Image (cartoon, rainbow, N blue to C red):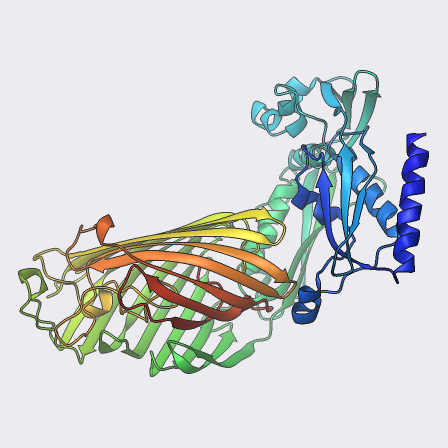
Length: 608
């Protein structure tokens, strides 16, 4: 009877709305959903919603309300609950409200019911071996449903399919290329209990056989085979194949690098392997122009040539011009897989001129860098450098002893810099989840005796939280420290820390936050502390609104961090999503300051 009344209500409401020329849907909301958040349920819907403002300014077209549209999305909500273990979800009468703006608001009233919980998981391996005997304890701990038995959580489809794929991959990595993982699932609907049995057929143990390489013309086959993590006679492993494919691609010589195992119906125990390659063009080039609020008009060119000096070496010639860098010429010779498959040697002579608000210098030198790519997320580098610096800046001040540093007009530097970067933010160009940590430590004066021996370190942490669909909360913290090893003076001008600008505290122009001399010239400092928080909201598929707050400062002395001396800024930004990342404008002004002039920053990419 209740169902009949509900249907009559819906059809009457639908008829009334049809009489009003099919009003558009302004909003969809949910009531009674405790197990699944409203934002996740919204992702399941196909109903497009928008108000008049969204349609007019952001091109967000709304659907017109119909009964089939409502019923179809109710089934999608039900299916979403079933995947989370709620098999008995029902719906009360919906609330359908016509607004004064002649739009429709829909509320789905959900009764979740009791979830189905997993009572027992058993395993049968070839009808003989037990699960505990066949798999290691480390593997056992990674099976999601097995671990969920202890906490009595609902049976989730996502965990089931993930476990099935994981068990199958583990068998493949152990050499069982023909392994099959089936299951038998029994659900007691009265007790809301589920009983799962994994039926595992591992079949015969297999081995790598002959290896054939195709598609390489410039790169010798021996260089390709050297990147393989297996050889004929080794136990077959899907993991070793995947890692070998990454190592071949890491050479930078190929557009396509695919490794295929030839499996036939007669199931041989020795499997042939085919490496299919497509080489990248030997000569490529990139050119670009742009404009930024800090570097003004900029133009760059980058030319790459492959198979130089060695069969896998490559050379890049890079040139750039902007207001901050009137010229910047870089020559890079890169030799991948120098010692290990996932490392590379970079020899980089350079010649550049920098026009920063605090200084003007000409720099020429040589970097010798060893890069180590541990995983897709973790990288490290060791850089040995030699550099000659010619400076136009002679910063002499009489304000305090720690500011009395006479910067020579010409000096040499040499030393070593070590860096580590971990990043699991996704997606890479515009993260909505994950975090990154970057650490760089520099010691000048370690190769030859120098007149300006110093230490410099910088740590930067970023965190991204996906609050709901289209809403991201981003955090950034940065801390810098530098000091001369033989005095209390400031380090050279190009090595000091500066605050303010597009990627710093945005209420100030570039390098304008921090100590200055009597002429208002930025001095920079040996200590830096910055922090930012930013709320990003997706207004439309291509437009993002950002609200942010920044804090930070620079202090001249080393180890001199004064939280009561931080300066603050707040503002907003409009950014447009592009294939190369977000592009947009940030508007910010200082807070708690007498001078609170607005600053406008144009950025390609998010500030952090």
